[in-house]
Image (cartoon, rainbow, N blue to C red; front, side, top):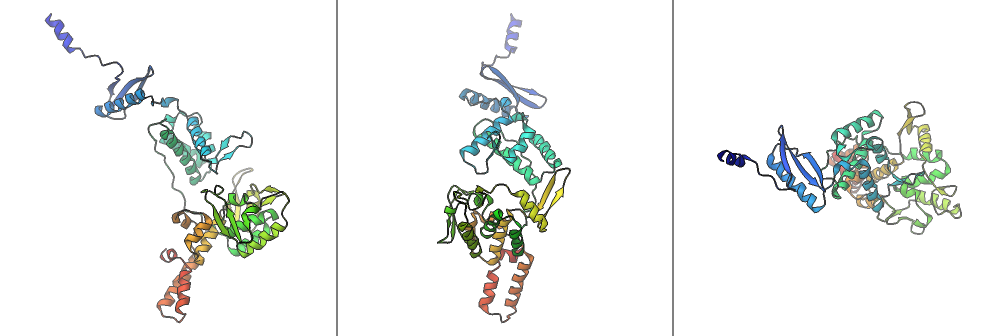
Amino acid sequence: MQVEQTMDTTKKARRERGTGRVWQIGEVWYIQYYVNGRQVRKSSGSTSETFAKKLLQKRLGEAAAGIHRDLRRLKYEDLRRGFFDDYETKKRKSLRRSKKTGKPRLDSVTRLDAFFAGYRATAIDTDAMVEFTKQQQAAGKADSTTNRSLAALRRMFHLAKEGKKIREMPHFPMLKEPSPRKGVLQQESYSLLLAALPDYLQPVLAIGYHTGMRLGEIQGLRWGQVDFLNRIIRLNAGETKNDEAREIPISDELYAMLEARHLKRVAGCPFVCHRNGRPVGDFRRVWYDRCSKLGLGHLEEQGRRRATYRGLIFHDLRRTFVTDAEYAGAPRHEVMKVTGHKTESVYKRYAIDNREQRQAAMNTLVAYRNGEKTGKNEVAQAVSATPESHLTN
């Protein structure tokens, strides 16, 4: 009898059903619990038993509340679907649709599709992203291009976490990007390019050069938005990148071109920039060809039937507009209203540094300090024509 009593006291008490358990393998603690009758086992990722027990209680609470997710079944395609749903509900203007299938598409996501298709969400970790980056670099993709894809993937995970589909975010190994582009179009080069482009592209170039408008805004511009009486182009709310309305003054040169185009407009076509009555579409081939011939760019051969263009791009017109406005001493807050920039930090990235302008500003300052008789007002005007930022660079 004494032996039987001793054996009973050494038996471990059975744990209550549904409370799960923790155990140790090596130094790491693991947890086990059930969700809807199915066993779940996983590492706590910690060498602390206390941490493992707390994690177990948290997972049991989630299961009881019905918010537990089986991450093993969540795939890249589920993350992708949530990403595009968010784009569509928020009516993002950068979203495109396939002409063949009508499905939404983005270049940044297309690159992810080619690599992560079929991946479980739990398998998309830092190591997998590093392999993706290596593949993109081997294909000749710029680091900034790869970063756009990684940013899209990060957004997919953020949305999944907000929807309680995942609990943890992996680390996203972003690459160091090059400095902002330095492309600007000088006045003489603008005149040459304007003459070289076909007739239907000349107003596209002129509007971009004289207003700093984005290409998409120019392509969608209608005659009803051009107020010749007040010499203003009106961009309506919801049609701009930040969905805010803008009024853009029309310069004399642009006014003359628009007036001449308006007199010859195609009946039934509301668009300012069109080709045979249809909105101007993708014109990169023509742009690359004309810029290459004028020495504003060139095509680099990268194998049979493939070449990469390096040089002036259309978006450089926006940089040109901001840069010229800065050097002209135009009030920055007013120019930002024209370009639609919301913050000075982004706006100033478009202002390209110019050594000659900076030297001219320094010469003016030296002349002022030497007491040269240039006239106090003239000196003040000359100094104010160059932003302070260029004096301190």
